[in-house]
Image (cartoon, rainbow, N blue to C red; front, top):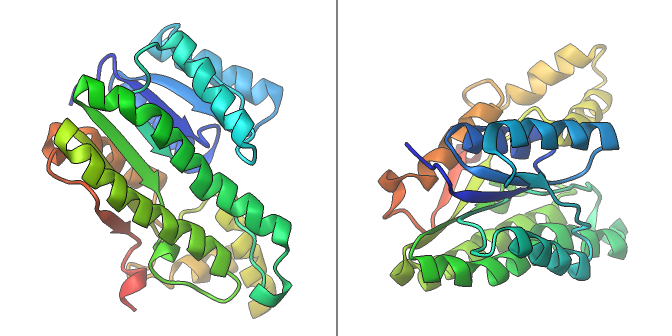
Length: 262
């Protein structure tokens, strides 16, 4: 697979799944635009890393994804450097807050929906015209198995993640005549900092003596008995960017070790 020269924007790409996806795309020749949280040293280090792999067209762009004004500014900043927009858009940025619906803070609802649904909408709206004009584009939305099922305390997370699946289907229909595909990847539990919070809560709830025991039991709830790996998700994203996936669009693609089959 050769993606040389394709410009890719991956949100939430300073750590976890997003960073794994960004590195995989860079190795295949993409010019990466990264954005996400992190201290100055981390961000500067990552920007240097991607510039070394991709050239000067790669850069870090700051963005507060709770703010539409900030998202719109990011789009403008990118288009000043890459006047033909991006070729690959990976909407990966996400947060979580687990709490019963009657206790759920309104501000958290707003934050979750802004980051995981409104921002992908805004980015797709801005960049898809460039893709249509070029006759090629890949939009990959990182949803979750929680977009297909749910658990106590995760109603809002599930709402956002199921919403992105619906958005992906509609965008897929609009992009299809122009060579633009849009799919939703639905991972199961991946050992990231976001999931680690849930592992520690699981340890406390189950009164397990060690973190390692809690981690093993937490991830072994999938039929495969293990966590989904970041590299596996990255490989799936690479496939969706390939010519082999030209006819795959509008699909919620589940990679959860069989968790949702139970």
